[in-house]
Length: 195
Image (cartoon, rainbow, N blue to C red):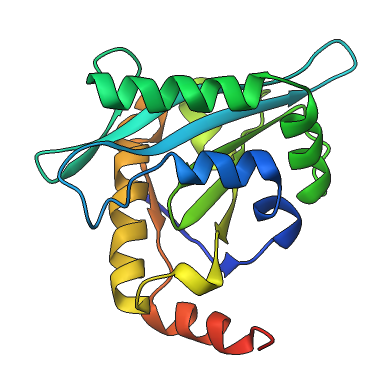
């Protein structure tokens, strides 16, 4: 049986206004407007007494109309962008510390799955076995920039395609379907923003 997790969109200005985050977003291609290229990156942020670090774990590329995770088989332009992202996030402890602070999350590790128009911030309960870890997932869908977002219907479809690429890349998430917000929810969120 598939576990369906319906995501609610939000804006977390404290996260998306971080210089490192803005620079990462600038490295990414729009999956709706490209037939190839680096469209997303999964960044792990660890904040423990023994270690504070961030690392770009996996890149996501557009191939054959689908989004695929990749760590090694990247084209030259994709590899250059992935290296730039890695350099941006590993240069200091700030990306990890600021991510934990912005999300008010004290778990040891938070991952930010960053795409051009949204970020999925997620954590797992590490005490769960691999078989049940996905069910322990806590996820937040954060829209990156109100001013540059596509139409709500297009954005909803794009988010779903990105989420499907993400879950397909994880063996222990085959029984999970992350559901993008529908166009109405995205439209309501935009309407509630101060002008």
